[in-house]
Length: 91
Image 1 (cartoon, helix red, strand yellow):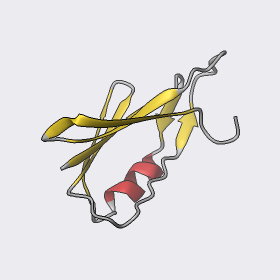
Image 2 (cartoon, rainbow, N blue to C red; image 1 turned 90 degrees about the horizontal axis):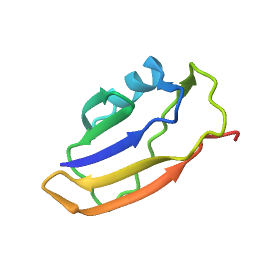
Image 3 (tube, helix red, strand yellow; image 1 turned 45 degrees about the vertical axis):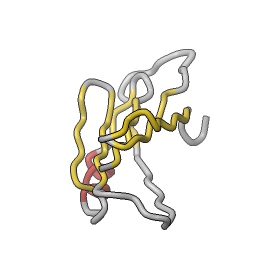
């Protein structure tokens, strides 16, 4: 099982539409939202490229917004962690 761990930007939430679109993908086993982190559990990955789009909604205006992290790792072997950062589209 693979986990995509998305830390939300300060002042943002994931839209319900975005959650619904993710849940409808056959590769997605489960989605959890805890505090300001979204956990997307995937059955497995193969050599085929996958793209995931999250729609976020700003609910609080935050100055000096800092990048948030996206971590991808194998549930059973978290040592192979891949980390990336984002600021969102249009910034």
